[in-house]
Image (cartoon, rainbow, N blue to C red):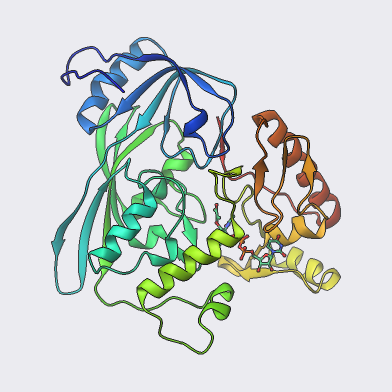
Length: 345
Ligand code: EPU
């Protein structure tokens, strides 16, 4: 999209770019200015200019975890740094690197093609490699933080590149140092450490049906099972706009959990750190009767109450209106607060 330029010339920002095709909700949205990043070297000059012009800015990867307004002021950086490689290998593990703009699912597929299993539970998660550490993507008992060696990012405050170790990334459930400091870091490259010793991780309930009787499926079989489960539960954004799980699974203190389980013995929950419990937000929303409900142009997906969908002409306002109804009802019935997962830009 950008015209070619060398790293030191003034970056050419593209005016009035539609982002409808670049957000999986499919909202009608555009950005005042856009700039496609295809290499890390472009960033320092670009960000100097952004600061100089006092432009607001944000990075857009796959657009799979964002709620876009009709018009984004300032500049939207379209992350498109590609490329993946094996960096090194020792007795116990292999180090891999991938650019921030690499499609996540294609990266997972590539690791399996290289005979490096480990990420198969995370197949078919929409988005990019660069976005993966920001919200510490997770599915079917695996979180990406476990496999990250380091994350390379440009720090817009210090105007320098920094490599963050796994510890410095401060990964938590759908959370990281990068997410807690939004609009500070531009993730350019992620380094993964894949252990050579592989073990199937299939304790997640959904796998029981898929592998009935087979306790040692291959990585490829797990990959296919994950694709099958996700395709059934989560709508294809190309067909119905959505951003995956719309709410985080809420984490409640042990005492609150005890009160809830006493009142609602069917409550679905998982153990969490420090005696807390993580509740299945999908179950809570389902119990409130929202599953399959439609509100104008938006609604709650019929196969998974945690997913809000855009039937075509919905807007950020519509989806946030529906979200508010759900949050209020869940709070009324269970006394539990639901947090929205995608970034509201
Ligand atoms: N449930 C219902 N009704 C529903 C949906 C769920 O009763 O409509 C109950 C079911 O009993 C189910 C339980 O809730 O067993 C949990 O649901 P599910 O297994 O579908 O997983 P989830 O908690 O809804 C989380 C992640 C997903 C991830 C899956 C699989 C969050 C917010 N969501 O969903 O991540 O794919 O587990 O590991 O943590 C995403 O973040 O975008 C995402 C899709």
